[in-house]
Length: 200
Image 1 (cartoon, rainbow, N blue to C red):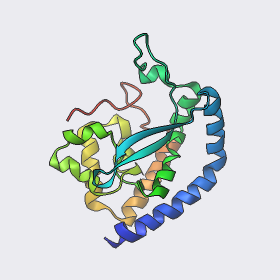
Image 2 (image 1 turned 45 degrees about the horizontal axis):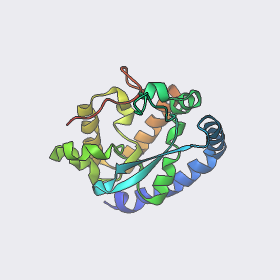
Image 3 (image 1 turned 90 degrees about the vertical axis):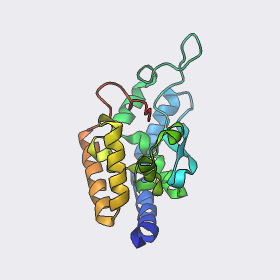
């Protein structure tokens, strides 16, 4: 309890500032390239549920354009992913603005990933427990497959994290995440660009 309420938020604050300072040249370059390719649109905002299902605005670098079909509907993700966006996503650089979400207190560096708001009514009572902690930039499910595992396994890993949260567990997830990024492992599912829709 002491770790979750005092030590973990302090750790989030210090590490987020440190990471943002270190990656600022890369972040700035990414922003410039996306600004050119996306005609000034560099950030993507989306409402996500946080701790206790409180809604907040998650920030990401905008890796897709807004191209639509003849009916005015957005084209599939794979067709809207830009050349620069593809590289940025492959290196997980699109996640960097979420460290500002951590500084705002909406997220933690480590925790269950914040999913879509429309999924909230679909959760079982057990699955809802993932919202008893702050959502994270990375988590136990991310280092165990990310988008390549089933929804059932994803929730299983999330709940396991909620029940076993600790400093050493967070350190393990952090180092496994760094290893995943270096190996570019689990970035996309085998059947598409993003995880398939959760249907309850």
